[in-house]
Image (cartoon, rainbow, N blue to C red):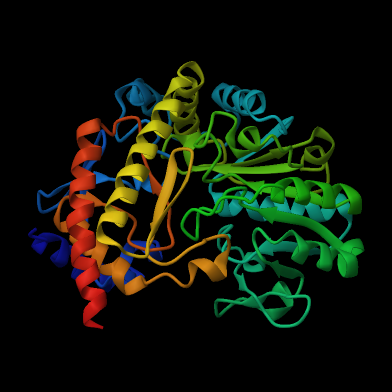
Length: 435
């Protein structure tokens, strides 16, 4: 495929934007390419500035569950724009979206709108600390919760693994209150609580890890976290920025029947517009200003455009729950088809799927935590990505990201994807042999 115009724009972008992109994964560095620049998108397809068309399995990293430029979602957006893009004071649609969220999620009595997933998780942790009067938090290696200082950490050393900053500009004093545990290892969490439990404000976790590929929770893991938090009086935070309204209308907490104390949301509740939210038990949420002392504010929080699109998006999903069954069936077809190719080519690879989100790990499983995932062959994945792109299939430009389907992906799209996958894996296998 010709990517000349994308290349020209990228060179210009690098003069004015760090790395030429506004989010690191868009740089395509991990797959050895320069990024493609997108001109438009519709349905299951995305089109770059060079006129190339791709079946899209990024879907803006999850929120476009109804596909790109869905006419039912966008209906009335012109009228909304004409009424004003931001007020700085409340509007009725904020209330309607909040009501839908509290009705959909089994754990949420009240919700506060924000502008991003990062803002949601940052605010949720502040709230948990205020509620418990404690400072320390637990997160899991490989789970990403945005780029706020206390969460930009990697595992340190020692029996209790305190966070070490993963970015310059993050003071060690900030991350010393963050403890890193191993996802799917309940014993690692119990050991920390036995020693530090009286000081731990919360556990924050992706109920299905979607930032190290797709890693499902082992049976009993989420239940165990709930039990530990109950025992020690800590707050359980589910980061459902990816899974909320994506795995099911009630999110991962509905799928696994676990009630967290606070839930973080994003992406899908704005139908692709910038948005985030955090919500939970009434007694916790009433600590948030102006009712309580925990300060959090934002001029664009609950802005009328994001709320209007978000409301229409959620309303369609609420009234058409069969969409979730269709998404899972499509993902199953891809899973089965790719697994057949893996057997046919006799390669070490594994499809990991939870409901309608999945990924292809190029390595030998099992894949239950960060250490497992890091054993994948990233060079092989890079070759695979490049070959898929050349065949008109856009998958995440990183081995460690989830693939997403939309309601617009057709049977023909899936067949075309499987055909490309067979050819791309053959090339990737040859690349591996050359090393």
